[in-house]
Image (cartoon, rainbow, N blue to C red):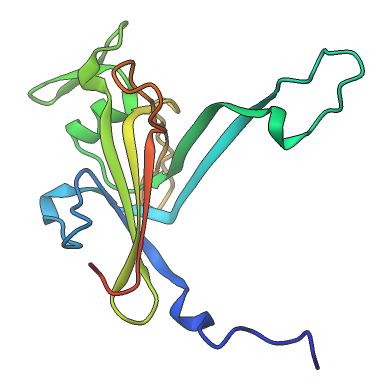
Length: 185
């Protein structure tokens, strides 16, 4: 069978397991401190980085659309979503998007502050040699709101959605980074 094959290195290029959701990760050493674990997830996470395109030929008489010379990236929408199973006041404040913590009380704010944006990481196992895949969301902000779903004889769930944001200081920097390491460093 000519077309029913897989590459010989297929199993060394698989992402394995649910990964870990972090506030800090060092890709050069493939390390993180346990205190950087943002929370336990259920069902893994979902990540998307989707560009929006502009066709400069659109609206011009006799111009052919979808020519590569006239295609431009207008913006990027970068999101990570999933379900958290653990929560504390720090995570609750983050899920609100704009909020503050006072001892054991978390309140929502009506305005965003620069401190409401924070970097987040998802890191998962990769391949057969202790490799990893890491996704770094830059200036992430919870855009999914605060949600809790309780269940009889089960644990509560906190759905999340974070959107990464560029900065005026570096407007041309797309707000995510992707690392793929076969050896863990």
